[in-house]
Length: 300
Image (cartoon, rainbow, N blue to C red; front, side, top):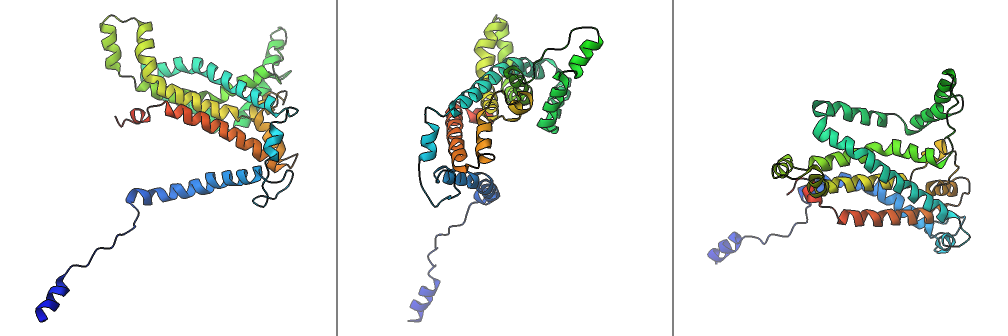
């Protein structure tokens, strides 16, 4: 009997399954909490307001699709603002792709030790408020301003009246978002192996052939990320159309701002914000599905 008791006592207990989080999950908890508070919670609030009763604050207490139906009303001109925003964003991306590529190529292949200093020159304006920089351009182009006054002092005709036009709005967007196109494009070009380019050149490939068949395809992930980032930022731009454009063109972000401020119609503004967010999110997911992020991050 004693032997059976000892044997029973020495029998190991069954290990109960533990539900402890892994080290990676524990480290990710602060980031998850930050995203939940700063990103997910505002989106949930916007979704709640988008289905609330129009011109009310009955969030999470009512459900209606009238706000979305109003956006698709043929008499609603909000889609004109959306088209203007898309047009400005597309032209900004196209112009910056042409402007930034030679600079990015120079930072990788030409400038050598000066590349770091030149990069700082492009980063430095980001330390100054965007509104301050745009008002600086207003002082430069305004009548009797820097450009106009200098030309008149030299005895020439006054400067061109470019303020408060769609063209100056596009100029402001190109100026503002240049770094956001430049640095992803620079990263993409940095992924092109120099040995591969040298080998193609040794085999008799021309410069245009090397660019079309080697450099451009290998750098395309970085170029696409720069285009996507620039487009997302540009489609939500407001300051350029306000300060430089003088609201001669109403963009979609300004319509959302008006709905939340002057009109005090939060449900309508939320519905418009949801549609814009859905459009940008779908575009982002489509673009990311075409990118090889593992190769860009050096995992393979």
